[in-house]
Length: 152
Image (cartoon, rainbow, N blue to C red):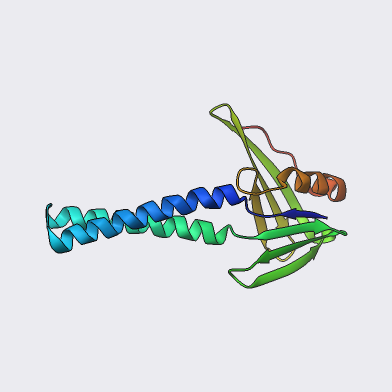
């Protein structure tokens, strides 16, 4: 049984960035309300940009929060924040592909699995634990569905 879950360190780092952006937004709005040190357009643009970045980061964190269990000839996907829970037999895998990108002398890997009901999941080695175990499981259980990709 292989359990793929989000890395705690990744979510901790992203959480610190969210807190820093939120603190910056609060300080800008507080400065606007009490002092007005800058022009109105500065506050309008700064608050809008910080809010957009904050929302995009939160959506990325929440959308990527999932648990995947592979074993007993099935893959179980749990997304607790969406209330989604589904078990797929290995025979429902249409295709899977592992992409490898070399950047700054580090290897970034992303695994994409497509299922028969038009759903797909993506897992990366930097955001999820037990990534390599899932790849080994798929190589063992679904070798014919593998799509060979070139290294980028």
